[in-house]
Image (cartoon, rainbow, N blue to C red):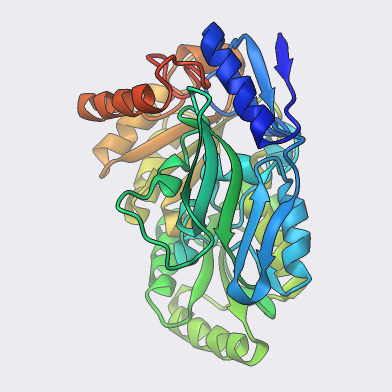
Length: 399
């Protein structure tokens, strides 16, 4: 396989232009931490952005940071931490699921990775202020800027989030950041079934407690984190006196669900990192991992429909709106069952996160699109990448 290793955005644009002229498909990667996410591809050439590495702009007072796309997320985290700031969307690491690392800022944005705080802060795309990128023609362009109030008629920067590099190659990304919390504690309820757990989580999210994480770990998942019962966890962040007061208020609201346990800062942080990275479901390595995005109230019903047919380990995040499922290896990855259960209980979508390449080639990894959205996706692909060289078939077999 050929290999482009550009040293700067100009070299990256030249590489894409050369590939376009030769109609040479490109696989775009930084640290390749998410190479197993999506359909397997047999592209002729890898565009390696790992040398596009570095912070290009940082104004702590303005809460804005810009970085080249190949900059490791850890580098940005370390810089922000010096000023008590953070990336609010908590991009996950695939170290547990794939045995890789946390990856780059470009990979996090182009896959729209968002962690447990999404229910409060929003998704990764909500913090994008600007993007510099290269189209499938090899043409450099930019969208947005470094100003929080920047407004355009069409928010192209955010539109590229979640495109998996199929529309453009991001070379630099500007993000809004936020102050980090002084402390974090987690309220724990024990031994609830998924239905009662999701009810408690939704109740918590409806209070003024300002919950920044709401997850349920059934027994098997909880045991991996040292608990002896299923746990229902709610994270509270902020200044210590405020957190203490909100904890007591939330415990009182939820007293009918049982006594409230408490995890202090270090233990709380450890638990939410495990939830962010889906560590409780990572083993055994051969298990198949699905990610389901549904309405929270439907989460337990969908999980029950699946576990009635297949043994599975579960993890509920986002108050039950995000369900992670680990299945024993099976010929069809239970794709039809999972998508039917979602359709019967209010809709949503399912993504196959971990499976052998042969399975990811055989069944839709991402939720199949209705014809109208397929046509729109095709038009976008043709506009940005008319020669079809950027990550062809990474998301759907049709293009």
